[in-house]
Amino acid sequence: MDATTQLVEDIRNVSRAIVREWGFMGGSFAGTELSPSAVHALIEIERGGVTARDLGMCLHLEKSSVSRMLRKLVEAGDVSEEAGEGDGRVKILSLTPEGKRRVAASHAFADAQVIGALGRLQPGQAHAVLEGLRLYTGALTGEGSAGAPPAITIARGYRTGLIARVTEMHALYYSRETGFGQHFESVVATGLADLCSRLENPRNAIWSALRGEEVVGSISIDGEDLGNDIAHLRYFVAADGARGGGVGRKLLSAAMAFVDEQDFAETHLWTVSGLSAARHLYESFGFTCVEQWSGRQWGPEMTEQRFVRPRQRR
Image: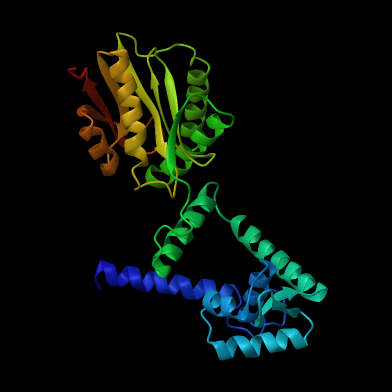
Protein backbone atom coordinates (compact mmCIF):
# COMPACT_ATOMS: atom_id res chain seq x y z
CA MET A 1 0.00 0.00 0.00
CA ASP A 2 1.50 3.35 -1.04
CA ALA A 3 1.57 6.42 1.20
CA THR A 4 -1.41 8.12 -0.47
CA THR A 5 -3.61 5.03 -0.22
CA GLN A 6 -2.67 4.61 3.43
CA LEU A 7 -3.45 8.26 4.15
CA VAL A 8 -6.89 7.98 2.52
CA GLU A 9 -7.65 4.84 4.52
CA ASP A 10 -6.50 6.47 7.77
CA ILE A 11 -8.68 9.54 7.17
CA ARG A 12 -11.69 7.37 6.39
CA ASN A 13 -11.13 5.29 9.53
CA VAL A 14 -10.94 8.41 11.69
CA SER A 15 -14.03 9.87 9.99
CA ARG A 16 -16.05 6.74 10.74
CA ALA A 17 -14.92 6.78 14.36
CA ILE A 18 -16.00 10.43 14.72
CA VAL A 19 -19.42 9.72 13.19
CA ARG A 20 -19.97 6.86 15.62
CA GLU A 21 -18.83 8.84 18.67
CA TRP A 22 -21.16 11.68 17.71
CA GLY A 23 -24.08 9.27 17.74
CA PHE A 24 -25.03 9.31 14.07
CA MET A 25 -25.43 5.53 14.00
CA GLY A 26 -28.09 5.32 16.70
CA GLY A 27 -31.78 6.11 16.70
CA SER A 28 -31.33 9.34 18.67
CA PHE A 29 -28.85 12.17 18.46
CA ALA A 30 -27.37 14.92 20.68
CA GLY A 31 -29.23 13.78 23.79
CA THR A 32 -32.64 13.80 22.06
CA GLU A 33 -34.88 11.17 20.48
CA LEU A 34 -34.61 13.04 17.17
CA SER A 35 -32.67 12.01 14.09
CA PRO A 36 -29.40 13.82 13.22
CA SER A 37 -31.09 15.63 10.32
CA ALA A 38 -33.90 16.87 12.58
CA VAL A 39 -31.45 18.18 15.19
CA HIS A 40 -29.44 19.95 12.49
CA ALA A 41 -32.66 21.41 11.09
CA LEU A 42 -33.63 22.84 14.49
CA ILE A 43 -30.19 24.39 14.90
CA GLU A 44 -30.44 26.04 11.47
CA ILE A 45 -34.00 27.26 12.17
CA GLU A 46 -32.71 28.81 15.40
CA ARG A 47 -30.63 31.21 13.30
CA GLY A 48 -33.84 32.84 12.03
CA GLY A 49 -35.39 33.60 8.64
CA VAL A 50 -35.03 30.01 7.38
CA THR A 51 -37.31 28.38 4.81
CA ALA A 52 -37.73 24.74 3.83
CA ARG A 53 -35.71 25.42 0.69
CA ASP A 54 -32.88 26.84 2.80
CA LEU A 55 -32.84 23.68 4.91
CA GLY A 56 -32.67 21.46 1.85
CA MET A 57 -29.66 23.34 0.50
CA CYS A 58 -27.88 23.57 3.85
CA LEU A 59 -28.44 19.97 4.92
CA HIS A 60 -28.13 18.46 1.42
CA LEU A 61 -31.59 16.88 1.63
CA GLU A 62 -34.20 16.24 -1.04
CA LYS A 63 -37.34 18.39 -1.00
CA SER A 64 -39.52 15.41 -0.07
CA SER A 65 -37.24 14.50 2.85
CA VAL A 66 -37.34 18.08 4.17
CA SER A 67 -41.15 18.14 3.90
CA ARG A 68 -41.54 14.91 5.89
CA MET A 69 -39.09 16.03 8.53
CA LEU A 70 -40.73 19.46 8.97
CA ARG A 71 -44.18 17.90 9.18
CA LYS A 72 -43.00 15.76 12.11
CA LEU A 73 -41.33 18.74 13.83
CA VAL A 74 -44.46 20.87 13.45
CA GLU A 75 -46.68 18.07 14.74
CA ALA A 76 -44.34 17.56 17.70
CA GLY A 77 -44.68 21.25 18.59
CA ASP A 78 -41.03 22.14 17.97
CA VAL A 79 -41.44 24.30 14.86
CA SER A 80 -44.03 26.80 13.65
CA GLU A 81 -44.60 28.12 10.13
CA GLU A 82 -45.59 31.62 9.07
CA ALA A 83 -46.30 33.03 5.62
CA GLY A 84 -43.43 35.08 4.28
CA GLU A 85 -43.81 38.76 3.51
CA GLY A 86 -44.50 39.35 -0.17
CA ASP A 87 -45.10 35.68 -0.99
CA GLY A 88 -47.55 33.74 1.13
CA ARG A 89 -46.46 30.49 -0.50
CA VAL A 90 -43.07 30.70 1.22
CA LYS A 91 -43.17 29.57 4.84
CA ILE A 92 -40.75 31.10 7.32
CA LEU A 93 -39.79 28.59 9.99
CA SER A 94 -39.26 29.41 13.65
CA LEU A 95 -38.81 27.53 16.91
CA THR A 96 -41.60 27.24 19.41
CA PRO A 97 -40.80 27.51 23.13
CA GLU A 98 -40.59 23.71 23.19
CA GLY A 99 -38.30 23.76 20.17
CA LYS A 100 -36.04 26.31 21.83
CA ARG A 101 -35.85 24.12 24.92
CA ARG A 102 -34.93 21.12 22.81
CA VAL A 103 -32.22 23.03 20.92
CA ALA A 104 -30.77 24.37 24.18
CA ALA A 105 -30.54 20.82 25.50
CA SER A 106 -28.82 19.70 22.29
CA HIS A 107 -26.29 22.53 22.56
CA ALA A 108 -25.57 21.60 26.18
CA PHE A 109 -25.08 17.94 25.26
CA ALA A 110 -22.74 18.79 22.36
CA ASP A 111 -20.79 21.36 24.39
CA ALA A 112 -20.20 18.79 27.13
CA GLN A 113 -19.07 16.23 24.55
CA VAL A 114 -16.53 18.64 23.03
CA ILE A 115 -15.30 19.92 26.40
CA GLY A 116 -14.81 16.34 27.59
CA ALA A 117 -12.78 15.47 24.50
CA LEU A 118 -10.64 18.62 24.71
CA GLY A 119 -9.91 17.86 28.33
CA ARG A 120 -8.20 14.64 27.27
CA LEU A 121 -5.85 16.43 24.85
CA GLN A 122 -2.43 17.84 25.61
CA PRO A 123 -2.12 21.65 25.98
CA GLY A 124 -2.00 23.29 22.57
CA GLN A 125 -3.53 20.34 20.69
CA ALA A 126 -7.05 21.80 20.72
CA HIS A 127 -6.06 24.49 18.22
CA ALA A 128 -4.51 21.84 15.97
CA VAL A 129 -7.83 19.95 16.03
CA LEU A 130 -9.76 23.10 15.10
CA GLU A 131 -7.35 23.97 12.30
CA GLY A 132 -7.49 20.45 10.88
CA LEU A 133 -11.29 20.35 10.94
CA ARG A 134 -11.48 23.75 9.25
CA LEU A 135 -9.10 22.72 6.48
CA TYR A 136 -10.78 19.36 5.89
CA THR A 137 -14.28 20.87 5.85
CA GLY A 138 -13.18 23.49 3.35
CA ALA A 139 -11.62 20.81 1.16
CA LEU A 140 -14.76 18.63 1.28
CA THR A 141 -17.04 21.50 0.31
CA GLY A 142 -14.68 22.73 -2.39
CA GLU A 143 -14.48 26.08 -0.65
CA GLY A 144 -10.87 26.14 0.46
CA SER A 145 -11.26 29.48 2.20
CA ALA A 146 -14.57 28.64 3.89
CA GLY A 147 -14.18 28.83 7.63
CA ALA A 148 -10.51 29.66 7.21
CA PRO A 149 -8.75 31.03 10.28
CA PRO A 150 -7.56 34.63 10.36
CA ALA A 151 -4.38 35.40 8.43
CA ILE A 152 -1.11 35.16 10.33
CA THR A 153 0.41 38.50 11.31
CA ILE A 154 3.80 39.23 12.88
CA ALA A 155 3.95 41.58 15.87
CA ARG A 156 7.03 42.78 17.72
CA GLY A 157 7.29 43.14 21.48
CA TYR A 158 6.10 41.55 24.68
CA ARG A 159 2.43 40.79 25.22
CA THR A 160 0.63 39.39 28.23
CA GLY A 161 1.07 35.62 28.52
CA LEU A 162 3.89 35.49 25.95
CA ILE A 163 6.46 33.83 28.21
CA ALA A 164 4.07 31.04 29.19
CA ARG A 165 2.83 30.50 25.64
CA VAL A 166 6.28 30.38 24.02
CA THR A 167 7.52 28.04 26.74
CA GLU A 168 4.51 25.79 26.16
CA MET A 169 5.10 25.64 22.40
CA HIS A 170 8.76 24.70 22.94
CA ALA A 171 7.94 22.07 25.55
CA LEU A 172 5.26 20.37 23.45
CA TYR A 173 7.29 20.35 20.25
CA TYR A 174 10.64 19.22 21.65
CA SER A 175 9.09 16.67 23.98
CA ARG A 176 7.50 14.99 20.98
CA GLU A 177 10.37 15.39 18.52
CA THR A 178 13.41 14.87 20.75
CA GLY A 179 12.22 13.64 24.14
CA PHE A 180 13.27 16.77 26.04
CA GLY A 181 11.58 17.07 29.42
CA GLN A 182 11.21 19.29 32.48
CA HIS A 183 14.80 20.54 32.53
CA PHE A 184 14.52 21.87 28.98
CA GLU A 185 11.18 23.53 29.70
CA SER A 186 12.58 25.20 32.83
CA VAL A 187 15.62 26.52 30.97
CA VAL A 188 13.40 27.98 28.22
CA ALA A 189 11.09 29.66 30.73
CA THR A 190 13.96 31.16 32.74
CA GLY A 191 15.92 32.37 29.72
CA LEU A 192 12.85 33.82 28.02
CA ALA A 193 11.82 35.69 31.16
CA ASP A 194 15.32 37.15 31.37
CA LEU A 195 15.28 38.27 27.73
CA CYS A 196 11.84 39.89 28.10
CA SER A 197 13.18 41.88 31.04
CA ARG A 198 15.85 43.34 28.72
CA LEU A 199 13.70 44.39 25.78
CA GLU A 200 14.28 48.06 26.51
CA ASN A 201 17.72 47.55 24.95
CA PRO A 202 17.21 48.47 21.26
CA ARG A 203 19.41 45.52 20.19
CA ASN A 204 17.06 42.97 21.78
CA ALA A 205 13.70 42.06 20.27
CA ILE A 206 10.99 39.40 20.22
CA TRP A 207 8.25 38.76 17.68
CA SER A 208 5.00 36.80 17.86
CA ALA A 209 3.12 35.15 15.02
CA LEU A 210 -0.55 35.88 15.67
CA ARG A 211 -3.69 34.22 14.39
CA GLY A 212 -6.18 36.79 15.55
CA GLU A 213 -5.11 37.28 19.16
CA GLU A 214 -3.66 33.78 19.55
CA VAL A 215 0.14 33.40 19.63
CA VAL A 216 1.06 30.57 17.23
CA GLY A 217 4.78 31.22 16.85
CA SER A 218 7.72 33.24 18.11
CA ILE A 219 11.31 34.26 17.45
CA SER A 220 13.72 36.55 19.23
CA ILE A 221 17.09 38.21 18.89
CA ASP A 222 19.28 38.66 21.95
CA GLY A 223 21.90 41.24 21.07
CA GLU A 224 23.62 41.17 24.46
CA ASP A 225 24.29 37.70 25.81
CA LEU A 226 26.99 36.57 23.35
CA GLY A 227 28.82 39.90 23.14
CA ASN A 228 31.33 40.73 20.37
CA ASP A 229 28.63 42.27 18.17
CA ILE A 230 26.97 38.85 17.73
CA ALA A 231 23.21 38.44 17.54
CA HIS A 232 21.76 35.34 19.21
CA LEU A 233 18.67 33.92 17.50
CA ARG A 234 16.54 32.30 20.21
CA TYR A 235 13.06 30.91 20.98
CA PHE A 236 12.12 30.19 17.38
CA VAL A 237 9.05 27.93 17.33
CA ALA A 238 5.64 27.47 15.70
CA ALA A 239 2.63 25.86 17.32
CA ASP A 240 1.01 22.61 16.24
CA GLY A 241 -1.44 23.46 13.48
CA ALA A 242 0.53 26.52 12.36
CA ARG A 243 3.49 24.83 10.66
CA GLY A 244 3.75 24.44 6.94
CA GLY A 245 1.99 27.68 6.07
CA GLY A 246 5.00 29.98 5.95
CA VAL A 247 4.84 31.07 9.60
CA GLY A 248 8.48 30.20 10.22
CA ARG A 249 9.65 32.10 7.16
CA LYS A 250 7.67 35.19 8.17
CA LEU A 251 9.17 35.13 11.66
CA LEU A 252 12.70 34.55 10.42
CA SER A 253 12.31 37.32 7.84
CA ALA A 254 11.35 39.78 10.58
CA ALA A 255 14.28 38.74 12.76
CA MET A 256 16.85 38.89 9.96
CA ALA A 257 15.60 42.31 8.83
CA PHE A 258 16.19 43.49 12.40
CA VAL A 259 19.67 41.91 12.49
CA ASP A 260 20.62 43.63 9.23
CA GLU A 261 19.21 46.94 10.39
CA GLN A 262 21.25 46.72 13.61
CA ASP A 263 24.29 45.69 11.52
CA PHE A 264 25.42 42.82 13.72
CA ALA A 265 28.68 41.22 12.64
CA GLU A 266 27.21 37.71 12.89
CA THR A 267 24.07 35.89 13.96
CA HIS A 268 24.38 32.57 15.81
CA LEU A 269 21.80 29.92 16.66
CA TRP A 270 21.98 26.57 18.41
CA THR A 271 19.76 23.62 17.54
CA VAL A 272 19.77 19.82 17.33
CA SER A 273 20.17 17.60 14.28
CA GLY A 274 17.25 15.87 12.65
CA LEU A 275 15.03 18.94 12.23
CA SER A 276 15.50 19.01 8.46
CA ALA A 277 12.75 21.52 7.63
CA ALA A 278 14.22 24.02 10.08
CA ARG A 279 17.73 23.48 8.71
CA HIS A 280 16.60 24.17 5.13
CA LEU A 281 14.92 27.36 6.32
CA TYR A 282 18.05 28.54 8.14
CA GLU A 283 20.22 27.85 5.12
CA SER A 284 17.87 29.78 2.84
CA PHE A 285 18.57 32.87 4.98
CA GLY A 286 22.35 32.49 4.78
CA PHE A 287 23.08 30.35 7.85
CA THR A 288 25.77 27.67 7.72
CA CYS A 289 26.32 24.83 10.17
CA VAL A 290 29.84 25.47 11.52
CA GLU A 291 29.98 23.05 14.44
CA GLN A 292 28.26 19.95 15.80
CA TRP A 293 28.83 17.66 18.77
CA SER A 294 27.11 15.02 20.88
CA GLY A 295 25.70 16.09 24.23
CA ARG A 296 23.23 15.26 26.98
CA GLN A 297 22.53 18.69 28.45
CA TRP A 298 18.79 18.30 27.72
CA GLY A 299 18.52 14.64 28.78
CA PRO A 300 18.66 12.25 25.79
CA GLU A 301 21.93 12.16 23.88
CA MET A 302 21.60 14.41 20.84
CA THR A 303 23.80 15.84 18.13
CA GLU A 304 23.78 19.58 18.77
CA GLN A 305 24.62 22.12 16.10
CA ARG A 306 25.67 25.74 15.84
CA PHE A 307 24.71 27.78 12.78
CA VAL A 308 26.26 31.13 11.85
CA ARG A 309 25.08 33.83 9.48
CA PRO A 310 27.67 36.53 8.67
CA ARG A 311 26.85 40.21 8.19
CA GLN A 312 25.03 40.62 4.90
CA ARG A 313 26.37 42.96 2.27
CA ARG A 314 24.19 45.99 1.70
